[in-house]
Image (tube, rainbow, N blue to C red; front, top):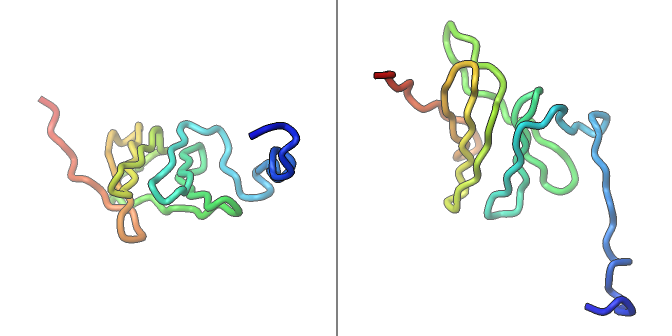
Length: 108
């Protein structure tokens, strides 16, 4: 693309998201799934950005234990998004429109 291309950089638009627009704060990770969604983990939880707005992804329920804040997120080629929660040392994955908790592993 040349700088004089009529559809060059002028056709791009910069958008800044803040907490007022629903953006999470104190980000811990960002990943992009095969469909183009950005997945963001942060102080406030896990969010999916479609390019216009953030959708909050609820953490899976953990009976009797605090789950903690998400630390890392990783999008796989399959479209699943895996999330690690540091406080509980548990993994969850997003599939079929909801988070699923992996069984807790025994530490040897």
